[in-house]
Image (tube, rainbow, N blue to C red; front, side):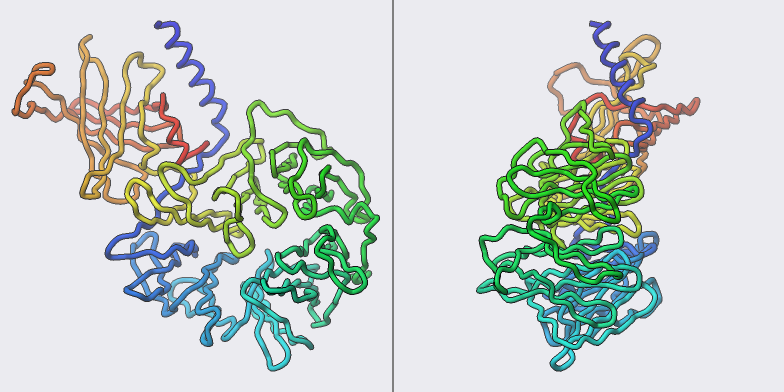
Length: 567
């Protein structure tokens, strides 16, 4: 038995050593709903040391800032927010959209006035480089472009029709930009979409918009913009037509149509990565392609290991991270940059995304949230987001027994993730940030050990009382002079913290299982300070009357911590 225990501890230690290069990803509570501060469900945005969030006061929804260091709450004078959007370290606040007093403003920092982007806008969209606002001007429309520093206004010769269900896409080529406005009505299709460059010139390429869905995409591909949609036959759309790549725009050649016989017509989900273009195709036999970055000529192709259920529109989503290409829809596969499939030692979780979910590719990882451009969860798929690191490791967060995932906000500029979620155990809404250092939360629960101290360790439990107060109960299983020593203590958890000190006591005066209404005698022994350095490692400082002990202990059990923290 002792041999088996030693083997188990050795395996655990080896696993932990293999993960030294990885950082923990912990959902840490930033602000929680309370009677004093009632939170809205819009995902907040971090600007410097301020958190811009939706606060509900009575029947009114307003926008406030919360000092992450000071704890100070400040009203921003904005009512009825419909969205708070991260953009280049700032927060863009959309309010009263659909009402006559609708407006879009920018919070750039504490003590700075809000910047007005538009009063009475009919729509907005963003790219990596700029935020765009569409406004009406009589029988025409204007587009304002905000790059984080200045606002440029562009007058269009025509009117951009916008409906609340519309999708906007943008493709920027240097100082030129194109937009696609997929205007449609659920009662019947209206189109085509619009392609507009920075001079206000409108293009009407050979595409239309599917009448009952948003089947149109505009994607940047190296120095080009590619348009995918349902094709036109005789000037009209046909609901039975396949979803195809119909046009390619470049600054040198302008708009060029793509033949339906060209293999390019079947491609979508373009990724320009490390000097090459990668794409996937839809249909009953989907493929992944590696393309020449200039001519888009096929250099190599590889079939995926499954068929797609909806041949016309869906295609494997591609995520390019480091030296790998991930393909995900029904299953998730991994390829190297030469499109050689790489076998994985353990199954990779499914992304559950389709062609209209855009992955965020950051410096050393990618984030795939199952949401459309309007930050709405995709129908028929679970609410989740997946983090893919450049070393083939990954983590995935979704609804579970601890929390219901309401929404997720991805800030590519700061490479920061925030979510709104309801704590199932407490029934309270909270704002959480995905951070490297874990907090003292439910991830601490379980047994912990030091491989150098046989048969000794800690049992930790974070709990909630009937009155809603929270605590951590610590039991230390030790030895003293060759005899077992049991210490225990409780510490109150009153705020989100990454460090907790617990007073430990020794207990005596009662017999085992003997009924008694007497309290056990207890003697203070010392203070123990706990701090998680990653999901599976806890730093322990034990201070008694004689000396200070510093220990590093490892998790022995409780896989439920993965709901909150993953390496």
